[in-house]
Amino acid sequence: MAEKTLFEKIVAREIPADIVYQDDLVTAFRDINPQAPTHVLIVTNEPIPTAADVEPQHEPALGRLFTVARKVAEQEGLENGYRLIVNCKDDAHQEVYHLHVHLLGGRPLGPLLAR
Ligand code: AMP
Figure (cartoon, helix red, strand yellow):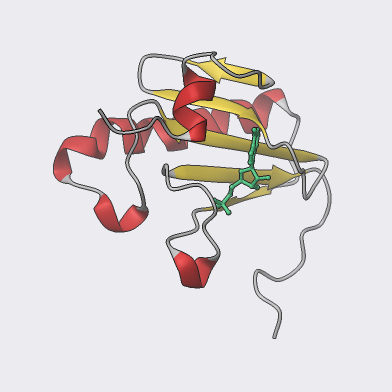
């Protein structure tokens, strides 16, 4: 069997994380190295390595990522807005090959990319 990803171990509660939401399809927990006052990662419970690996059967879990992002943003009081980011493979500096959405907010985040 393939080695579990770091995020699979968090989903299974085999390693500690500050989990803020979990259901049958996705898990949300605080990033260990936050880049904003709120920095939550929302991951699919079943590992999909990257956005380049998504298939039609993943659509329920991928849709859930967005509804949970909205819920967590509400819980966190991000009524001024927030940013959702998915990094895909090396050029995007993806570090953990288990598809996840970064939810960032709690301060003005500036433009998306340095010009
Ligand atoms: P990415 O570069 O999009 O793959 O993002 C990976 C994110 O995972 C980074 O923001 C890391 O800070 C975060 N991270 C790495 N290890 C952990 C951990 N054990 N618990 C929570 N977040 C983590």
